[in-house]
Image 1 (cartoon, rainbow, N blue to C red):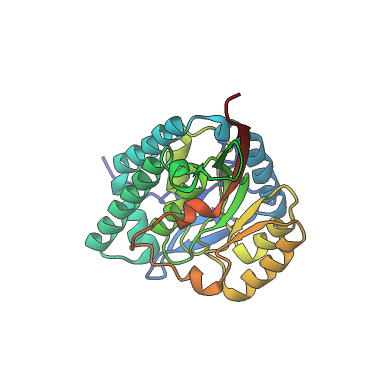
Image 2 (cartoon, rainbow, N blue to C red):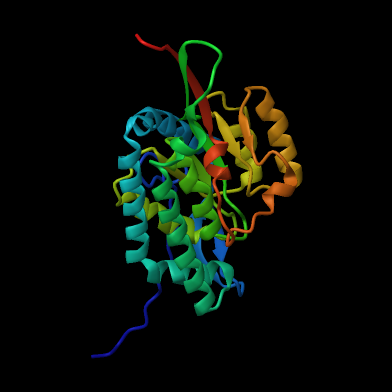
Length: 292
């Protein structure tokens, strides 16, 4: 039997919105290359309509996700870590392709990303004890403070750290009960696309995590102007774009993180701390008379 030459099936990746994988409504795609400049695949280039659809999905899912118990959210996040572990070979290949990393370096990055996800899964039922508490007041009252999720957060993932940075941005947002619309690295979207496939097959409710591929500088202004977005994570945008988005966000009183451009130069391999958990919560304080 003669073996006939065949053409490889080159993928055109989709967006991830409301638990589904739609094409961009505009039909736009862009070419993705590996670290050596070789064509790898096409990725969907999100449009304004795609961004709006993602915000609608995130808003619809947010109250249910915030209403889940912290313990349940932790279980679901841990399930995502299990799924990443199960597909670690693909994530290693994605990181090698996206970042041009050696095999040992890519393995180390994937290990760190899994550990990071588990780290934030563990914080879901502990964070409120750290930042909340009973406050001493001058009167016969209990005064109790507790953190509550901000709502819908749009996160611009780091452009260089395609997996560990992405995980470090998304996980703390949803751990505290927010829903997220994440915009992946423009040039290195493959780990984000694979992560979307993991989220879709985990127990994360539809709409809690939405992943867009495309240009943050193009999508950012629409998100900053959107009245139903509560906060922005500007980690993955450059200084000029960040300044414009901060100004636009002031019109709708959005929370912006990091507030200073110097804080966007994050070492994702370092100790994550709790700053990203605290960035997207509001503190609610309750007064209650003693003895009633």
